[in-house]
Image (cartoon, rainbow, N blue to C red):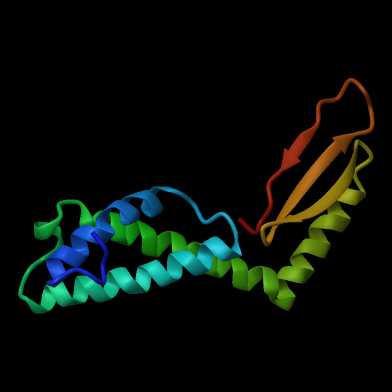
Length: 140
């Protein structure tokens, strides 16, 4: 069922439920995914609010709604904070600081790559017997 075709808020909630289940368990992949998730969060919030205006609890209409919605909001907030930090001067300084710190280590060569708006650090060993290490990024 389509959300626009729903005749009452409980039907809209039921139409949104499969997508909410899918989005709540997966992390934000890139900036386009983040925009889509924020739009879905807004739609789901409006449907949830309409159900509450009927003096119903969304969790009573669809068991598990509250947990999934909270998980979606938390993941969207985490991604928003990471995106804001990566775009700020503080985030740029942190990337440079990390780049310089890792560049001074003699056992690896550093490769910085941007993938889907997130910084990926890859460390390649200069010695053939040392394994390659992927270093964690502070931005996601």
